[in-house]
Every structure is written in structure tokens, then in C-alpha cells.
Amino acid sequence: MALDVGMPVIIGQDGTELAYRVVQDDGHESTRAAAEPLVCIPGGPMRASAYLGDLGGLSGRRPLVMLDLRGTGGSGRPADPGTYRCDRQVGDVEALREHLGLERLDLLAHSAGGDLAILYAVAHPERVRTLTLVTGRGRALGFDFTVEHRREALELRKGEPWFEAGRKAFEAVWAGTASEADWGAVMPFFYGRWDAAVRAHAAREVEETNEEAAKSYAAPGAFDPEAARDVAARLEARVLVLAGELDGGPLPRVAAEIAGLFRDATVLVQPGAGHFPWLDDPGWFAGAVAGFLEAGEAGN
Image (cartoon, one colour):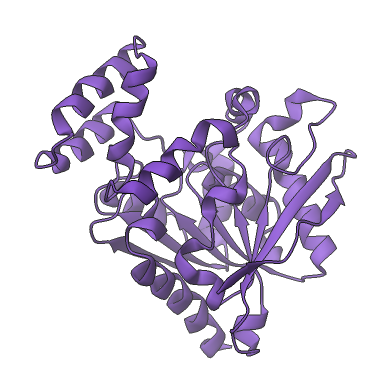
């Protein structure tokens, strides 16, 4: 059973209150691998970390420290909204590391959180032991996920009963003419399955997201891909890039290109998974991520 053991608050470098959750299984063994926390950065962008749940039971293998980015969940809103920009939140991750008293981090990031995790690794390469990008964005490295990528992934879902309605809604979204109903109709494309539990997860997105902050997250100046690629090529941290077979952001082949920029990277493609792979097959996901982390422990 995964336990959420509270939501402590720390103070960011600019005085903003930052909350984080610690989620761990009450039955995990106290081995070194289990004792080392896995610091998790949510995506959205700027969605409260609650949507990550216990990452498919990964909390049974590692305590999960889940940061609510500034202005989301239990964290406070900054005095300067400009600090919602991705690169300006690197200091929040460093403040959390210092608070936890960790020399190096095992860092996991989902979706848009991948940009922040990459920027943290670029700014503090000596502080990252492992970097796990779960269907992670790579704008920090010069990659974006295009409408063509999304359409390519859409075609994989032709057999679904909701496909035709979803495809029409998708085109409306990209044309900028989408209604609220259209936004709802495209949601199944983000998941490998579309049952009641997944629909409930999707329905919470709006209330869990700070839309103002999301608009600023990738604002001009946030990324310097050339500089980031130079550091990535020399990064000593082990990197896992995990993609969903059915996901368009990133497509598995694009995930492989992102991984290719790192010195020591592994690519895994989860069968039948969409953008939230821990929901599609929790056991597969938790086993894959834990296996990657524990392989590094065995080598030390």
C-alpha cells in the first residue's frame, strides 16, 4: 500500500514556498536502493504532482519525492510571474536537493517536466546520478513534437471506437477552433486505454493545472539547445528515455534521437502505452524504471 506521508514546505531561493509530497510503500524493504529517494518533476506543463499518483507502484521500490512546481498544488505563487519560465525554476529543484541533504539526485521527469530536468542536469551535472525521462519533452535540447508527429501516432488508434470523433476534434484543436467538447474528445489519444479510471484521471487535468504559469513555461529565452547539447554529450549520469508505443510526444523514434544526445542513455518503449504509461501497465512501468535504477546501484 502506497502512503502519502505529508506535504512539507521549503522556501525557494526567491522566497516562494515550495511544497513536495513523499509517497512510499509501507512494506518496502530498507535496502539502499529502496532508501534512496527518487525526485519527481511533473509535467503539464505546470500541473500539480498529484496526477503522478504512486507511478504505477514505483513507490514500492523507491520513496518518491514529488515536487509541486511553483504556483501549482500546495506550492505558493511567486511574486514575479516571470519565474514560471522553465529555466528560472532550476533553482527550485536545487533548493529541494539541498533541503533533502542529497549529494546527487536520482531524477525522474514526466512530459514537459523533462525540459526542467534536462536544464537542471545542464546547470548542475555533478548533482545528477540518474535522469529518467518518461514521455519527456526535449525542447531544452532542440526537439519539439510537431503536429505531424501527433498525426502519425493518431493513425495507430484507427481501431478504437472513439477514433473518428477524436480525429476530427484533433484537427479542430490544431486549427485553433476547438470547443470544450473537442478538447474532451482528443483525450483518449493520450492514454493506452480509456476506461473509467483513466477518464477520471483525464478529467482532473484542468483543475490541477496553472494555465497562467503554463503559458510562461516555454517563453522565449527559456532554452539554449546548443549549450544544453554540449553538456548532455558529456553528462556522466545514466539516462533512461522511456516512450509509449502509442504516444506522439515523443514518438519512439524521436525518443531514440533524444537519447542519442547523451553519453550513457537507454531507450525503452512500453508496449501499448500512451503519454501516461504508469496507468496503462503499472507493473511493466514500475519494473522497467526500478530495473534501470537498480542496475546502476549494482554497478556501484
